[in-house]
Structure formats: C-alpha cells, structure tokens
Length: 97
Image (tube, rainbow, N blue to C red; front, side, top):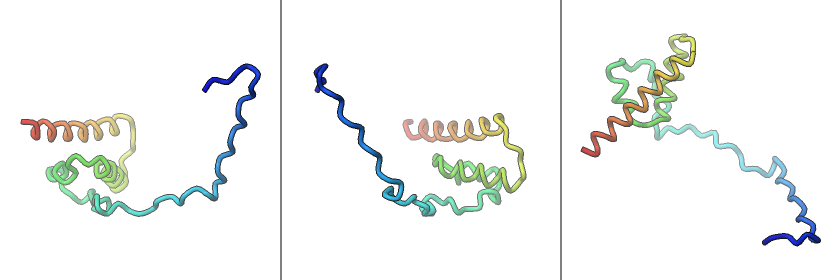
C-alpha cells in the first residue's frame, strides 16, 4: 500500500526487550561427533572420519591447531578448508557417477 502525501508513515515498532529473546542453544551437537578427539586421529584416516560434514572439519581444525600450538594464518585456513571443499566435491562426483 502506498501512502498518500498527506498520510504520516506508521510509527516504528519497538523491538522486544532482550529478556524476551529465547535462550541461546548451548547444547553440544554430539550426534555430529564434535566430542571426538580429532587431534589423535592419524592423518591418513582423518579425511574418512571427517567426510563431508563442515561442522566436523571446523571442530577438527580447532582441535588440531590448539593441540599442536600451530600459529593460525590465512594460508593455513585456506589450505584446510580447501581440503574440506575438495573432499565434499569428490564425494559428490563419486555419488553422481
């Protein structure tokens, strides 16, 4: 509906007070194996364990970097998540064939 030039726009509504917002979900996603110790898995098995689940890849990245005290830089992040993307793509390619 367009306003006529003589009509005033409706008053803005106030946002709900913060106390009325639902509580943040702090549950662990154990169904996605976030509680797995990825840092202890041998490298040649890690790709199979992580599969195509981005949450597992992110959890493993955090664990391995912290466990090994690896300094995080752009190259490390790009390399790690390139592997995640390529793994997902290869799984998709195999599924299509």
